[in-house]
Amino acid sequence: MTETVTVAAPAELVDGPSSPPVLDVVVPVYNEETDLGVCVRRLHEYLGSGFPFPARITIADNASTDATLAVAELLAAELDDVRVVHLDAKGRGRALRTVWQESDAQVVAYMDVDLSTDLNALLPLVAPLVSGHSELAVGTRLGAGSRVVRGPKREFISRCYNLLLKASLRAHFSDAQCGFKAMRTDVARKLLPLVEDGEWFFDTELLVIAERAGLRIHEVPVDWIDDPDSRVDIVDTARKDLLGIWRLGRALGTGSLPLPELRRAVGREPLVPGVPLGMVGQLIRFALVGVGSTLAYALLYLLIQPMTGAQIANFTALLITAVANTAANRTFTFGVRGQAGMASHQFQGLLIFGFGLLVTSGSLFVLHHWAPGAPVQLELFVLVVANLIATIMRFIGLRWVFRETVRPALLTEAGAAIPPPSLRPPPAASTRSDEVR
Image (cartoon, rainbow, N blue to C red):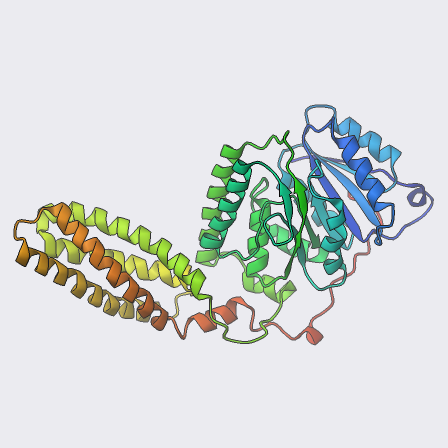
């Protein structure tokens, strides 16, 4: 991908070197010739009227096909501390990655061109990063104290999406897609190479990886007014987000992301060793695995029963799904990674399977004793009820199985080998005084 960069240089840059700004605010745009001037002038006025940190505005043009680039270049020529970066490919995430990685500012941020978020939240967003308290900061429309004006459809979609992230990826932040975020630049340079998405899932992937690496994410409740002229394709975005969740979840499950290395580089060591995973999160993930296992069990039973009879079909279907269920709960529910202890976990899981077999086979025995000619549909109903009972006991049993392994896994993922802060080298200070090339 080729890239063209146009830089607006204020007079002091022409006359001599100047210190890099503390904050670089990126405004990614695509075909925004009408709104761009209003947005940038309003933001520029805000930053120049009492904002306590030196700041720069970077307009990131994502391959616009209208006059957006020309408008951006006029703004850069007119206003101090405004520059333009042009990319030949679309994608908000792609634009942010390009600018953030090359920025010489201490903190990088971005906001949507429509300025839906009240600018008074910018200082609370940036201050924890400048002070060193946090590594990332995000605006949230779903937190206590937020005030949001938008339609019920978008509100419903936003809340469902963030609930899905909490259930599937164990996310703890409240709002993944609010277009109002900031990050320390030294952290960005290490974190961004791990983020694959270049479009709308970029924000979610960035936050999930940061959270898993032990970075502190500061949330700022915002006042937010929905832009009625938003051009986001909700259906296409939802499809790509679901694919992104699947891809990221698989990467986390297989351990292909170098989270321990990232944590050692920019993360934080745990305060107290051995803090267990939350019961509520475990229950949600266990339930999701259980739903999938129950559907697989029912399908296998219906396929096998006509050939083998009820008892053998129940045993075979339960055995296959029990092995898969233990493996899924090991990684997804209880967060245990790696091969260590896998055989022992499966063996103990099969012992729990034995209890489930006793409950379900016993229910079949009782059914056939009282109704010898029971149809397969009634058999399946009785077995599903029996499996629900067995599932409750399975959750209790698996918590016992993984009682000693969740703790070391958390410490490994949390970077127990991280040296104390006094032994860590400070982040390398940027020596660049020129603009992005």
